[in-house]
Image 1 (tube, one colour):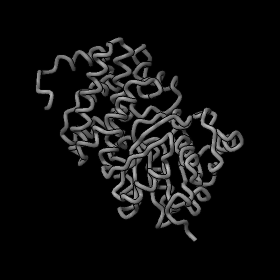
Image 2: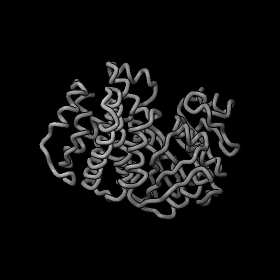
Image 3: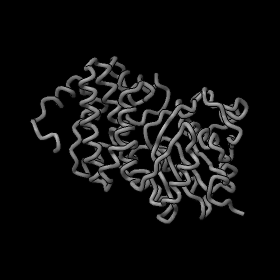
Image 4: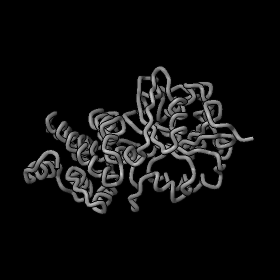
Length: 339
């Protein structure tokens, strides 16, 4: 018999990196039976023995309700809800492998952020292509660092879905005394915010690494928010979404705290390292690097001007010195702030 939707049924979390592990811990911490799956069997075996993810989230001890499951089919058995937490480049392949295993009643959520290369599609559009339009889906986003969620520090995030009951169930099952989830119906807006902020955080790291100061950082965040809004509205999002946790909140977090891999990437580049050297030093996926290329293409197709996004792209892919990119931004024609 299939599980009934709700906090008593298992949730399968696919992706055993830092973010997938943190979300699995939070589900289990709140009392929901949780199964964590990943591709690296040796690492999963170590996690099951140590009851923590020593590589990506060493401080997050696994609650009793969290089980590590190396077999995807076993992770999905009797689960009602499935949460994907993989980098954007892996989202479509994971969906394709998952599709034949999903029972009709299973609901799908993801914490993946970014536009797909080379299509420029958002995750919900990819899910529609792979799985069809009838399945209940949701996206999780907002100002959250995995380490702090794993450690049980107070955190808030947004869950967006056109299925209000699904969003509410996920929000209730994630929420605890230290974690609060809010719901939204604006999937596109939440996803655009999560994609664009990574690019802007690279720019913030470059700016701070070059010593441009607090004034420059705040200008970058504020004008970056304006660019994010313009693109989001052009792609069908609600403007108000970008003033919330998944927009402004996530943007400020990733642009100002060194836990952000995207910000650290910019800081490393500012020392003179190449992109490959900076990526190797960080040792984890830096979504803002491919996102800068995808964002440029998406903005061009939508006819949206994004000078900051363009500046980051030119630094990363055309070899333009960051100082020259900032100078180009500062000497653009004067215009109204609301344009």
